Length: 425
Image (cartoon, rainbow, N blue to C red; front, side):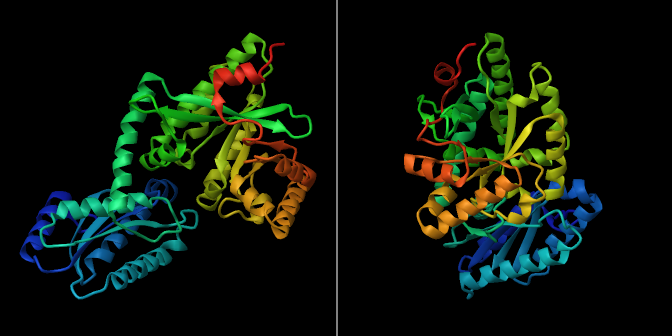
């Protein structure tokens, strides 16, 4: 058997072979497969150096090798470790607590030396149900569970289930649809207007996307965006939209249309690419248009991860002349402390946050106070998800003028947006 020189874990083929024999020779035992990788391991190597990354990998390997319940462990690739554990006579919940405690210790041991990494392990668990299961099936289940929570810092692990398998099968369906649409240039770009509540004039729009399946039916964004983020293909989608928007603005200006800024979503994955800002600027300069027409949106959650790296990248984007907005503010981990340090121009208040707060007196007070603070620090504000005139009136009275939501329009194809909102001079 051949072991990985760095970690001492078995290489993949020997790992699978050994684990399969252990299962075959113990048909009445209770086994579980654990699969783990390190969130944004490439960033850790980039930020702190490969020697630090190697130590982290060795310590991760040790959590498997030194566990008496672990019968065999392997390193399928880079930062990924997996192990077969025998837990005969042990309750599932007790084993899961054991895994959670191990992970917590590992994170705490390295937290101080990796202050910007927000160290986190993505872990999947798959229990055997009978003695006839193939090890590869259990490993596949653990990997599906691991990928289901990849990047979710609120979840210490996930346990494989049939429902998870169905979602994974759906993911397998989405990727070919996206790849074909990207190759053929058939990804549909929609625009949703941003409206001034006082004048009801257009002040901007947000670029969104739609995919069509094999039958020509629209695949909802909530089905494909997460899949693309988990696979890394969201980078390809964002680049596609970016080029489309740049080219569209150039065309509109040439046609003599009234052009308002268009916002483009940037996934947090972009900011782990060292050349992201240079790539954006290089592409943009092909079109000969002003950066005043472009706004880049990033979600608030990214600021709780590699904030120093992200802030430096955003500062470069703004220095070039682009506007930057924080999308979904209030959706998850918003902190008022961030408002004083974020190098952004616009705060977009999340539609769910708006809905929940407008339903009661305390919530309305929170919204009113937040808008007051944002206005005092001269931050532009957009309220998302406005669906009724009452919501519009209330938020406007609180001090927010720019709004987005179904009250005004749903996301519509670019051609329809041109006809409806973009008058010729």
